[in-house]
Amino acid sequence: MKIYIVDQAEDDLVEGYNFYEGQASGLGAYFLDRIYSDVESLVLYAGIHRIVHKNYRRMLSERFPFAIYYTVSGDEIKIHAIIDCRRDPAWIRDRLNM
Image: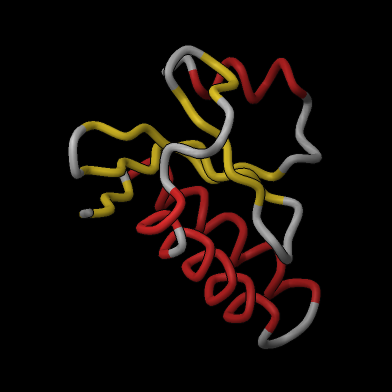
């Protein structure tokens, strides 16, 4: 399977990195490492997660309070958003309606 991260999801990663790096030096890099590990696990587990909005599936990160929203089509996994779960649910729905 191939994993693609769309530009907006990359922006989410940058935002998360900046937030955690502002909390403690090196924490931003650890955040990215853990999130990318979660994303890579989709090669094995894509499709087992519940559909939460339209056709988006949601996988929760193991280490950080972030959700990875993705779709599966054939042998392609597309990451559409990587969002902090502490956000307002209405904001998350609006973000996924892009």
